[in-house]
Amino acid sequence: MKQALLVIDAQQELINGNQNETCVFEKEKLVKNINLVIKKALESNSLVLFIRDKDVAGGEGKGFQIHEDIIVPTESTTFDKKATNSFYGTPLLNYLKERKIEHLVIMGCKTEHCIDTAVRAATVNNFDVTLVQDGHSTTDSSTLTAEQIIKHHNEILDGHYNVDHFSDVRSAQEELFQPRHNNYR
Image (cartoon, rainbow, N blue to C red):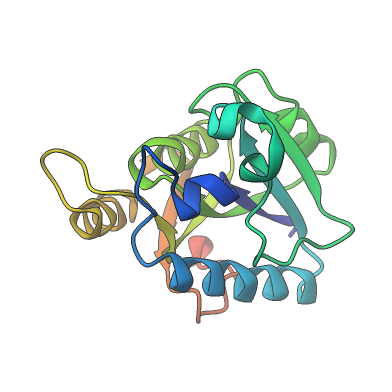
C-alpha cells in the first residue's frame, strides 16, 4: 500500500505565534511528534508532504516557512494553499492520485480548521486516513480551550467515514504506517 504523510500548516509563525496570536497548545510536543512521524514515514518509504497556508505571515518571510525545528527531508514536497482545505486550489489531489496513494497520515495545525477539513476531504476523495492524535494543535477559542478542541476532534474524527473510507485516530508512538482500516471494514 502506498502512503503519504501530510504535515499541514506547521509554519514558524503559526506554531510560535506573533504579536496578534498566541503560540499553539504544547508547541514543543507538537514539533517533537511531527519529527518522530516524519522519521517513521521515511523508514516506511512513504511520501512526506508539507502544506503551507498563504495567510500565515502574509505568505512570505521566515514566519511563512516550515517551523525551524522541524526536520524537512530533502525529498519532501511542499504545496501552498489559500483555503482551509488543502485539496482546494492545489495540485495535492492529483499528485496523490498519480502516485496511487491510498493511505494518508495527517498532522499539523490548526485542529478545528485545516486539520479537520483535511481529514474529512481526504475520506471523500477515497483515502483512508490516520489522524495523529498528539500531532495536531491549535489555540484557545472564545468558548473552548485548545486542549478541549483537540480532545473533541480526536473523538469525533475517530471513525469518521464516507462510505468506504474513514479516519482512525492514533498516537505518534504507534505504527502509523501500518494502517488498521481493513481490520474494521
